Length: 126
Image 1: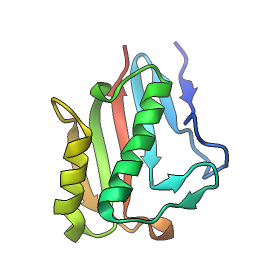
Image 2: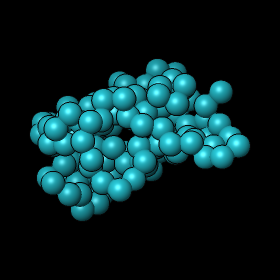
Image 3: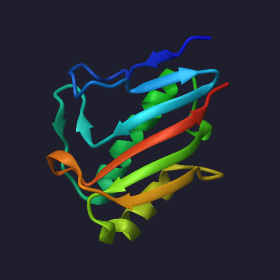
Image 4: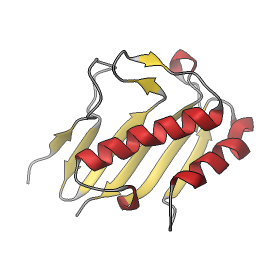
């Protein structure tokens, strides 16, 4: 089976040279998502909690576009602009998932455009 590009259903502007998701043999790799308005490409600034939940919604929509659900997310890698936001981000992140949480790595990173968070994911579809 050849790899398949999965598009974010709400994305109508270019935000870079990448696929929102790539699916092959049931494995979905979701590119780093951030707190963007995908109709305009503009950053939607907010609290770390707001940016976390919006970013996770973007991840969820890519997974759903591939035929999966958030329960299919096996691993997330999270980049925080400020590691001191960890506790607040962690509460918002945990509230998004039900049941078994995905495996996760969280690191502090230099992020572009003033965003507080970026999340990529791996899901097993089907």
